[in-house]
Length: 347
Image 1 (tube, rainbow, N blue to C red):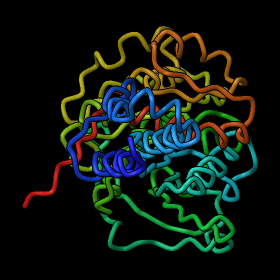
Image 2 (spheres, rainbow, N blue to C red):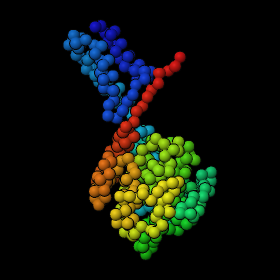
Image 3 (cartoon, helix red, strand yellow):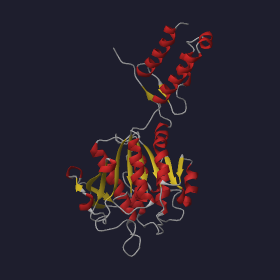
């Protein structure tokens, strides 16, 4: 076989990638289709041209990696992020992982609550009028949604804040000045989740993967699977949940079914998560409805339930370790069970 045939094989591979219909899955990336074309080279030619054969193998390796299904848009929803709140493991995770993901050439959006102790002037927050003003109902009570935005110039990141006079203004995170847990923490989490999802719809932005961090974002997985499953913005998304116990010990509020019951969600959604009827139920609820779980090893108390779900789990010692592994984990969760079809150009 001559050199012309050798290069014709390469051209054929390029043609397959750009023109010809091919299906790629996470578990089987068309090994047979790619390597079948290599058999165009005869055994004799391989023996005579080992260097060319190795070059072709390398070429096909990169071709295969290029057509792997990868998540392109990641939505981060966190309860804490530096520099807006004091440094903590969760705040560091909320800041570092989105930045590392953006630096890996993915498009991101980031949301967090506008806690009352966040200094708006110092952090240059301003309200986004076109996104604000919607009334969200939580347990039969209307609450007005206010959206604010700020930037972190050093990271080239924009952060959206969910605000409301009843739940966030002049109030801290999980506890008041006396160290007592707020009795309406579950309602605050439900409002935050609804506020984020409704705002993303208004932005007309369609994420591939939604990464939720902390108990404050724990309602988002169940909302996405049971209430927003037909929304174009979320219909095909995958969910990664990073639970954080935050030392919450209070019992669930008596009206938890009313808080959860949005758009047809039934009390049975809590089945298997409320064994102690405490606020850690929210973390277990998030893991139950997620497609993947990220867990810092400091949260060892949550690991048994995470393993019980049978979901893919990514663990790390520190947020910096997650920065190295999270982008690939998002690709794994996004690609699981999916197929990508590239249509031939029609004449």
